[in-house]
Image (cartoon, rainbow, N blue to C red; front, side, top):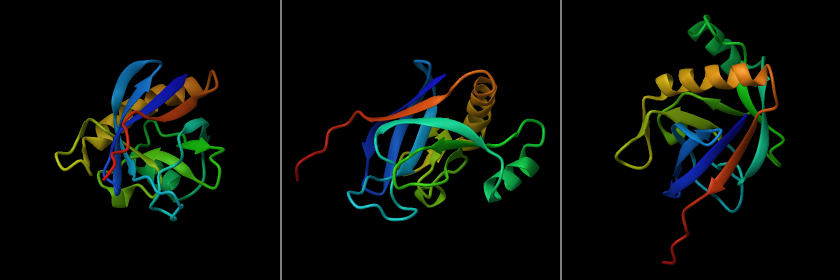
Length: 151
């Protein structure tokens, strides 16, 4: 399975993206903004391709086991990101919820720094990715599709 995160807007504090699975639209997403120098919990991961695996330990995993006992088997963990650890795909609506992770959504918020419908989007994406992880390698590619503007 190939997941693409197409980053189309960065306010400096938050980044909005479109997420595709095998070339088809899946959902929107929110991440922290780009920073030239990494700040813990405040910086999105670099553009690139990474592997997605299941993480079956940690606080998010325990929380999601209780929240989604009918389907949760582990957190979607974006691995092998240089200088970053424990990057997950999870639920959240605001930059404060990201901590460097990718938040799923049904639609972007009107302020360009939030998203709406995170839980519903997460459930749909999670079930597809979980099924794929059991059968094949899953990669996620982050690409910036907007241009920096000169001030």
